[in-house]
Amino acid sequence: MNTKSNSAVKRSALRRGLIAGSISLITYLFVVIITTPNLPPITALGAAIKVNGIILFGLAIAIGAQIYVSNYGKSLGCNISNKREGIAGSSSSTVLSSFFSFFSLVPLGCCGSWLLILSLLPSFLGSSLSVILIQYSRPLSYLGLIIVIGYTAFSAIKLKRELEMIENRKAQKQVSHV
Image (cartoon, rainbow, N blue to C red; front, side):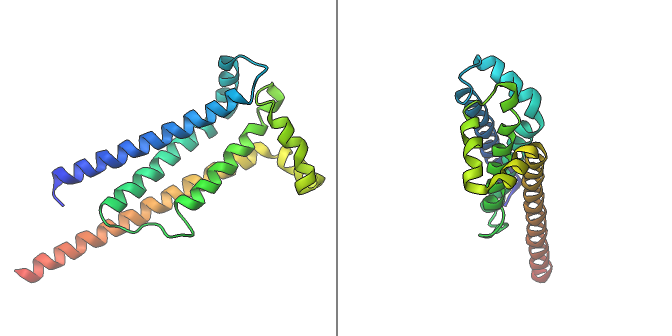
């Protein structure tokens, strides 16, 4: 692949990554707004960013990077993920991290609709597990973020190895033709 087309592939993958990261950020903020009917949207958003800013922006960046790596690899013919890892694992970690991060906003008056979900947890999970999930929602949110970042890093490492193997094969073909 020549440099010009490789650059176009990178730009396309980057564009998709930026779009995916932006969508995840907007979706999170939208959920905050619609689940916080008792506060003005600006106040709810401010509280969400102040309390969960690292998770909020970390997930958006990690998702964008994951989409970039995945799209860039696919466009070059690399197979960097399989059915059990990659986007699927990253998606479930993203959902769990976001889910737990909303719990930390409830005491601030944000995401009041999540109180209903919290009240239903004991009937599904039992009281002890529900208390643990609520009590440790913040560390669990960070754990989910770490998992998403880990999947992204793992995918990037696999892509780098695949690209190196492709370059090595090209170099070997050039040497054998001489």
